[in-house]
Length: 379
Image (cartoon, rainbow, N blue to C red; front, side, top):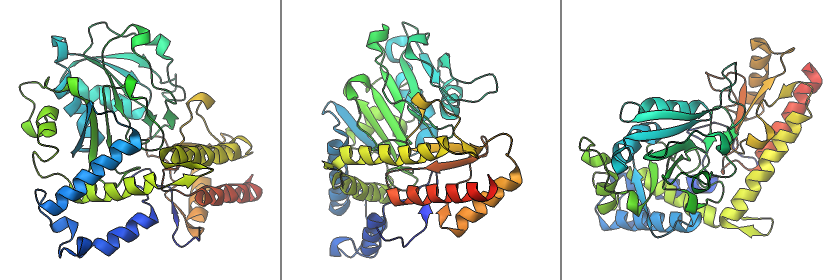
């Protein structure tokens, strides 16, 4: 790859594949010569139906989504679906109960939002005495209720940099409720075991496309349980019946996501193709940066090795050297080298590199070179 643009490590909205951006530019004024750009099309017209249908087919193929799951293209982002999910599922079975595993900042938000609509129990709390999230509680320690309507997990915590590398098998834990997964920040970065999932949702703006599109993939038997007060446009059953056209969907977001799905399916890496290639490249990218951090005299990762995210890697100056001034010096130097958006989340501080699918391995190599250069000067 020839470096033409800076490497964007933003946690979201995040970098898109350059090849996809070029396609978008080519289609901007007239999609396939039809005389309209995608943003100008009717969502019920034949042109957009072609786009939406192909995007759904490609996503189903990419993630190997079984036929008894519905793929919904919605809006609101993952934060809104922390309310929309309990509106749709909390009354399933009549219990009104929701169990939440709090493994980081986002699942903590999920628990707080769901409390407005359900009887929420935090069945595992991952924060340490300092309020930091560095490990994911073992499923064997989760205090699950037998009559819970569903169990919620965030399988990748963007802010704290923790990832569930294997989804829990609730049945093996004696729980027969469906697992609901917020997979916003690592969807399409790895293969998924759908046998363990009832519903998965996520905002598109990290690995899939522009902000505004939200993916919901829901098992068929979980439709039809919405509360009486759930708005019709947020009722998963209504949206599924209307094939995501109950109201005007985020048409441009769906179009760009479709191009990303096509790009992902075409990926080749180390003799692998499609999602397997994408996953292996993500493994290699993360390993490259973690190896540099583990060997560093100046920087450190604070996440337990078994829980380290491949997508979002927070890192910090070691305590004896940490200062706001040195962080600013690092960020200024990174900007000068075309390494963008490395500042940590405001609630966590430090630094963070997000290595989403669109980040080439060359970008991680450039960051590692800068880390070593910085260590020589300030270590």
